[in-house]
Amino acid sequence: MITRLAIESLAIQRGDRVLFSSFDLALAAGEAVALTGPNGVGKTSLLRAVAGFIAPLAGRIVFEGPPDADEARRAHCHLIGHQDGLKGGRTAGDELVFQARWTGASADAAHAAAERLGLARVLDLEVRKLSAGQKRRLALCRLIASPRALWLLDEPLAGLDAASRALIGEVMAAHLDGGGLILAAVHDPLPIAARTVEIAA
Image 1 (cartoon, rainbow, N blue to C red):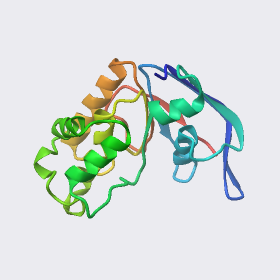
Image 2: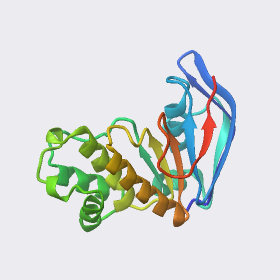
Image 3: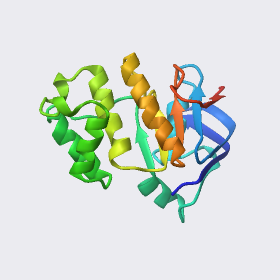
Image 4: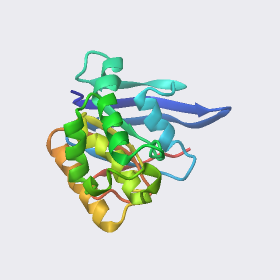
C-alpha cells in the first residue's frame, strides 16, 4: 500500500512548451490535495505523470510503501480522467463489471459499488442513455469496487448534482479515514477537507 507520495523538482513538457517546472509536493496517507490553476497549466499532465502515462522532463516521483514505482502504479493507484472512459454501446452493468475485473475486483464488488453510488436501477441501460451525472458516478464506481490507496482524480465532480457531490464526498472521506490518499485536479472545491496547491506556469 502507498503510504506517501513525493514529487520532487518536477518539470512537465507538452510539445515544445514547458508547462511547469521545479514543482514539489508531498502527500501522506489520510490526506487530500486539490490541484488548482488555469486551464492548460498542467494539472492533468501532472496526474498522468504520477500514473506513469507520460515521462517528466525533469524531477522524480517517489512512492513510499510498494517495492517499486511499477508496482505502485499497477496495483495501488486509480486514475479517473476528465473523460469518463466508458463504452457507450455496453450496458452500464457490463461496463462496470468489465472495468472492475480489469482492476482486479469481482462482479459482486462492482454491483455493491453501483448500489453505494445509487446506480443499481440503471445497470440494464446502455451507457449512452445515461445522464452525464450517472456516467460520472459509473466511472467513479471503480474507486469503491477495487480499493487502491492513491486516487488520482481529474475534475471528479464534473456533471454531478449537489446530492451526488455530497455522496462522493462521503466516499472520499471514508477513503482518507482508511489511510488512502487523494490527488485531484479541480476547478470547484472538493466536498472534503483538502489542502490546495496551485500549479503556476
